[in-house]
Length: 281
Image (tube, rainbow, N blue to C red; front, side, top):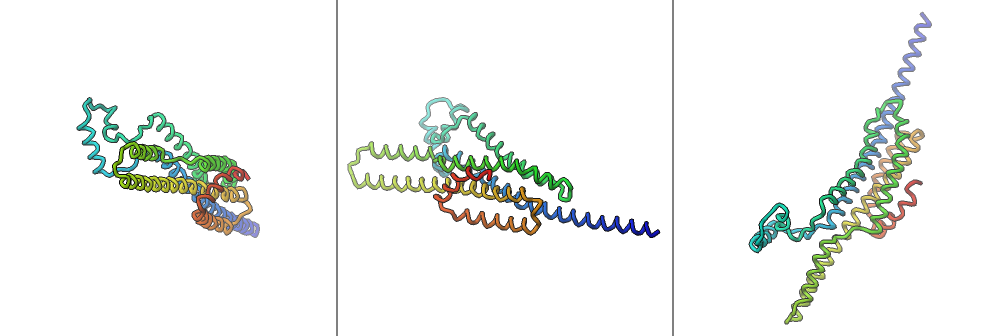
């Protein structure tokens, strides 16, 4: 009888200890997921900016619906040929640069492939059973995957910082307008000067918008890389960290994002071009 009571006591103590341990493991896993989510959201935002930067290279100046309608009516009135599926887009917007569909599709496939890698990494933690005995090993096994993703982010950031995309179509449009102004005979020098000044203002506005696009995109990649670096440390030292340390890491990630948000364009370029050196450290 005494042995039976003792056995029940031992079993109950073991069960309580196991439940406590699983609860602690669950809490650690859920807290680590917060940092993983930070990193996943940052990479999604970076690739959103990357896609927009690539696409805007070939985008014309935006027009109002009224301007588009007026231009289309004028184009149709002057057009003497037969309207076909091949030329209707040009008649609708002759200023738009038509990108080869295969090139556009290849870019979208490339971008989709990039996004998928980071989404799959985040999904590793979504699929980990918080209280599973295999959870810790799954976290450890994710470390080498993150190293490769960090190296990839650093490569993209470095290339973007060194050779940022430009608004190529819009630049070409303004340059053509300047050449047109210069080619005309102006009887009134003052009027010509006003046209050139107006052009100068347009050009500076374009460069400012272009610079903002480059800065915002690079900032997004630097932020994603920085959060990836911090997450790497959490994963590599997961067994040694407690819940409090992981919560602090999440808070530090928020502060880090805020700090990067205050960096100047020049500081971002320095950060972006220096990421390759620290990606695997």
